[in-house]
Length: 371
Image (cartoon, rainbow, N blue to C red; front, top):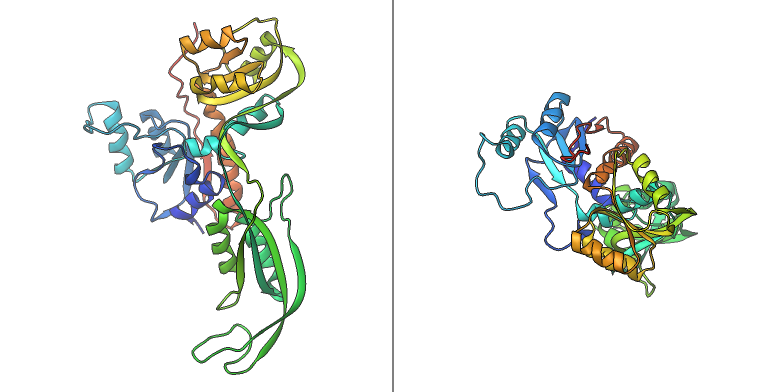
């Protein structure tokens, strides 16, 4: 059984909800339709003509990309130019394109966490918190026969996570009563007769942004025609979401050693470096992509070094003057998302019994080279 296109994207958005995207970002479905069965998905950093050719050769139905195929308003689609041929080939071969950009950057367990993990950062925090998600508590009453099914469903949708612990809940057994009225089709009992059922009161907390998914999963797994449940707002600090990460290296090292580590972990021939190569580095800030706007935040948070994908000339001057070392490793370090997102998505689809295959694009899309 192959997953429906919308089902595939629901799993992507479970990791990177669209609500996390920065204002004006061009995310979502750009080309084609999700109203079809998907046999093969390809994860790509960029949607270039060479990437589309790879997708055609691989028999791909859906490309999930980090960088938008439509970023600026289109003035024309000329098939005598590469940009136009991208759309021509996508439409001709019925390949849909979906983009997860800053929502994947901001997501917990997303792009910037992958970059921080790649260089071994510990005690990782969000560099620049943009907003906090409110917490809510779900209370649902479930017949004992469906206790595990409902529990696994709501946890899989995002409930029950407390810090580094998953599947956290409080459950207590009791007796539920109901009297099915005329016109009902009760799972247990008969119309007009008071029923008493052994039930479980199940309580789990969830981020407000996950509420819709959690309720949908709960209703799908629950056997009752009318489900009794409560949603309770909680007065407690929510998860902070934002751009970049900051953390500590396992052991202090020189800027030169950190640059070599970055080259090794991201398979780079070279990086641009600002700062004293022999200076000691312990705390490192990380921002994938263009990080010029967040260099001042790295300074404010006490970073010794700043790893990013693009840095401006004048920004580098300012950072250098304030004692912040910089490693400009190139925008292409975000290619880490290809293997990471494909592994995540493949696992999620397999958990639901789908045969849809997920692959990572192997086309090299970095336009720059060192000579």
